[in-house]
Image 1 (spheres, rainbow, N blue to C red):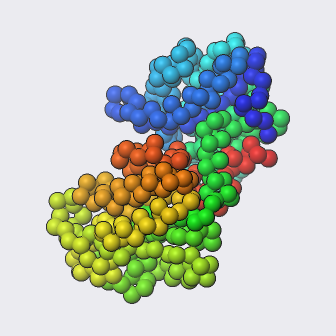
Image 2 (image 1 turned 30 degrees about the horizontal axis):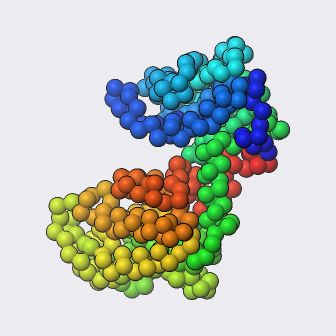
Image 3 (image 1 turned 60 degrees about the horizontal axis):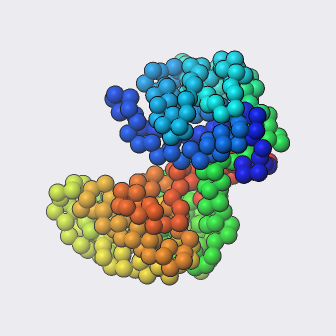
Length: 416
């Protein structure tokens, strides 16, 4: 595996997988260019070393060509950040002549990879009543055509850089399969390097005490995360909606709070594993409850295991926050994934804000703090704490799968 800092890009064409899946408004204007800005250091590195760039990305989930999801809407913003003209290839599979014509310092952006089903390797257009044999044949056909799709992309360049952590958990043509065409000339971009280092810091090289804060709405969405972490951490804080399944599993009354009865056996298993591994499992002890799911609902604070009927848990109470803060600020490594309340409603965002504050304090005390997952990243950013923690991950699904303990295809393809 080559390193972007030591690789000689002079006179080379680099094909770079980035994650430019940015939100667009109805006027097709970018409303948040964070992902574009995150890729700029890698792109500028290639240009500064005398290389040329072929940039590829997806945008949205198209089922075929779509003007609304065309990457041409990204060109002007990309030109602004790179400080140079960006050429655009309207078909990612028919850009050989444009790629061949690139000179040192020039940039070519390919059209949305997902305009082709081959990028994801999933057949499209199958009839709902298709037989099993038809489905099997369609899958085999798309896998075969995916090979040619990947080969064409690889033919454009001399080296491959993956800087798209947000899609690292997908074994797509541009994130995993293309790497085999560059056995000696493949590498991570700066963003990927940072993400991989952050994952390793918490899952492989964590200093103890190691605390994981897992929040969000459902146990089912993070069951494998909990099972993996309960064997690695010293403290496991479970908050948000998923906490009520654990509270009910232990005989608590949770009123109308969000919970999953079918996950109660799993919750009891995690509680058992925590005891077996000497892990301090910390649930909410006090809850701010409301009589409806509304910012303007009537509110009161009750013990988490005594929520009355007709009321539902919406945020962590002060006693819970106090308990969790003590754990967090005394930790050397902290991983946070998921809010501990309905943070999108201002009256129920206090618990999540206090978690962010505690992480900032722990960081200041010398702890390594990693925030990962869409909602917790949004929370820490909105609350102004993104620059007060050690690292904020850019990949929601990828980070989640990484902390489940899975090998991410986009990372494995470069490391192999």
